[in-house]
Image (cartoon, rainbow, N blue to C red; front, side, top):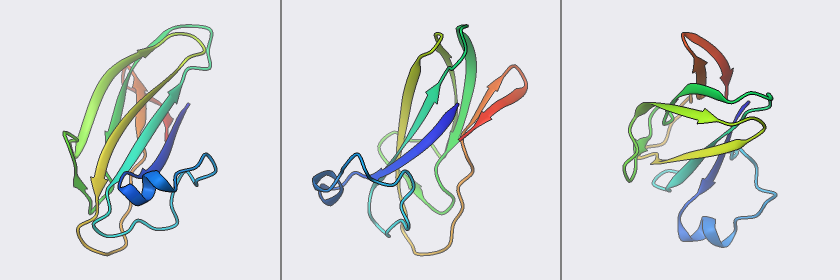
Length: 113
């Protein structure tokens, strides 16, 4: 199972962060830094090795050491959760999409964010 959760990482976002925040904001503001948390949960009784493919939203710029797109080999023990995060901002206004993160085992996509 894969879920995305977004939040601002500037001083305004940190001061107003709450557990009730929407997982996806109604809008992303220009020149405001955001973080996307990719939360992966293994709901099976078996340990699982997999690859996570994620990318920043279209039209955004990466921050810190984030790449535009990255594939990461990971493993999860049974009934456990792991979180990976990346940072980005939008330098210009516009209507942009975001492809969901993909979890694949071998050559088969088994979950999407």
